[in-house]
Image (cartoon, rainbow, N blue to C red; front, top):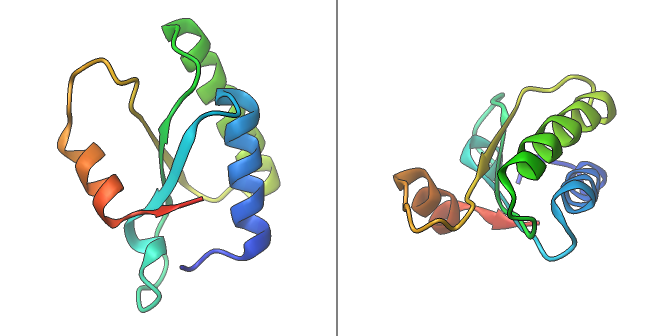
Length: 100
């Protein structure tokens, strides 16, 4: 995994702060591959909160804080609200990602 322990903790604590302590968070994509270079930080979350307005607000607040704390790194956040719609990206993130 190409994230420091400090960055992993910052990401996890920030996402849990805004999306709820019971949220499920995974890092996936190129940052999981130790042989890759560069790349954005791809994050998958199953939030504890459920209301759409709350999720939008949490996403904006969490991304703003992460950009500030992680020196403006590019971050992609995939949010699975568990509505019954299963997107292929959800499976990829769960199958290839690492839980934070």
